[in-house]
Image (cartoon, rainbow, N blue to C red):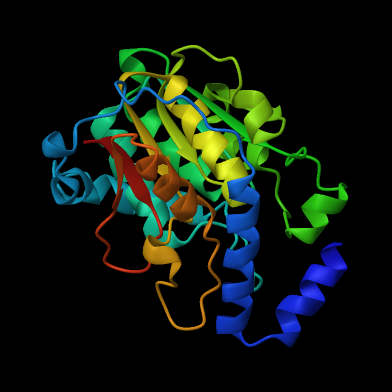
Length: 274
């Protein structure tokens, strides 16, 4: 199946492939059962000022130091599967701003966003011991797995975290996103959905993640493309989160995805209630 998808992707022009992908996502989303969603834990849209959150409070200098430290352990690969540098900076700023005591990341992958989150939490861990849980479908710390080889994971994230003095704050879990989120109470102050799910899974994961947030918590989406359109020329688009948010709004759920202002390319969006 993976080979067939690759053949279709490589044989079609990008616009045609994106159009086909949207059709498949919409079909799968239409079959997903309706979820009950209580947006009360989310921040109110009127209380959110993204420029202030991302560039205020003198965090920029700390980010430059953190970025330098991370560059010593995280090697960029020619084939990029990790989160982009602009998004890493935004994640660091948001976590420093909100200082969550418990943070959940769905989608560890190479560990780039995990490192950014842990480095931000390291700055305030003396005020209490923060906890970061990162979840993926496979054991990202075992380079021998087929998935690790496919995603070019050369250095296990746990090893990089140890070299940055952050490993003691981070817990790794192997599970499907929906399975991990199901049945959880108000457990986390900050949740980053950092995977690229199909629209039906994105719909369920957003609903479940809101249910796992403590009051006043933040829910950040990666790979959110407004209008389901690319942010740059030739960029591949996963419309899952966009279509999921659109369906929730059509169902009367009072939420909105605020795309983060960016100095470079970033497909992050913060969910707020309206």
